[in-house]
Amino acid sequence: MPSDSAVLTAQIIKELDTRIIDLESKVAFQDDTIESLNDALSQQQQQLAQMTYKMNHMVERLKSMQPSNIATQDEEAPPPHY
Image (cartoon, rainbow, N blue to C red):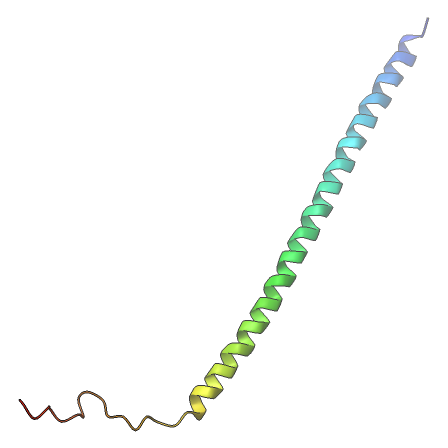
């Protein structure tokens, strides 16, 4: 028959094994979460870089556009039937 100390030692080892398994599971979950967040951040950085490039390109195009030769409504003479 096992002694009380042997039973107690076996229980402590079992509890420690359970705690270690729980900690390993949490670490694995955190690693997966960190990897997912890193992927999402990388995609957002790429999108931001593309949007910044496109916006800068549009600003340059707007700066280089010639003013329109069409008169605004305020500058237009009223039609002859007025």
